[in-house]
Image (cartoon, rainbow, N blue to C red; front, side, top):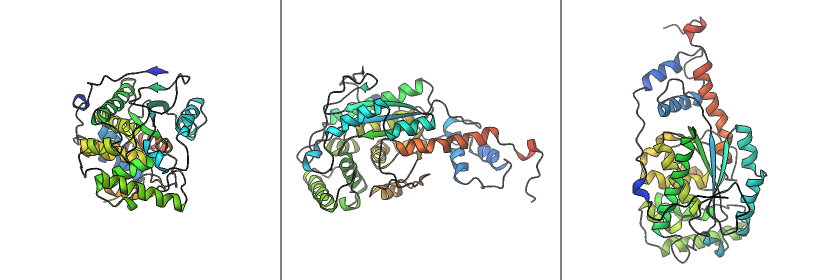
Length: 358
């Protein structure tokens, strides 16, 4: 297991700024897209995707280089309140499954041709036997936010920094497309509370069944989370809200979004949990959204409203609610297609095909 400790004094102010996309190349990109051998707009969303890739890369011929998916894992103290039908031990068991290559994200990242990394953000279990895990835990799981903040502000900042470090690491290896997944029993509870507080929505609009709660379990989860929201101050400071309700894996994803955008990487946004981390990141640096491609609409209750908050149009809607970054991996072939048509598809002039008459 690779141990990468983040010093306690390495905090958020050291993160590079996220600059909005420069749009000086937009007219040239649109002209190139429009002059391919096709009717204008006939490639639909792929045309917008190609435009976004070109703007992010400042190139008329954007490429997909070393695409990467990072799965952040962490445990949640709120599980003690019975908000999940699965025991907390499943988190460490699933991390072992990732390492063994037996999870859905292993299959999907392999099909997509993505490098896969697993990061221990704060699992409440022994991972020492798992040699390929990047070990940078902030703690052995968060505290129970039904009673107290999930983490301290300092822990939240360390986690944000750690996530940014991993994104920068992969940018340094040549990655220009990255996605983030998660594993953590109880993390839909954290995501729902982050969404409720930062979007000013009632908790019932944000809570879903997670890993498969029955009606009684869902009612209990709603009551527990409503009580937790009422117990904590109604701050909208993004780092404070993250520290109060978040998980270490969500905090690291927040930093990874910021770090990737600062490196001008295209970011594939997965489902509900990843979107809750992006919600925090966008409150810290709104320009992060310029670099985001929303992969899919999760079947988890609340995600559709969260996507509406971002004014986002996801590329896929497959009824997924697994997490792990599976939706992000499934979307990568669409980015490859957008890049390929920009590079390989002829223009009317080069193909000798007559364009549309005026």
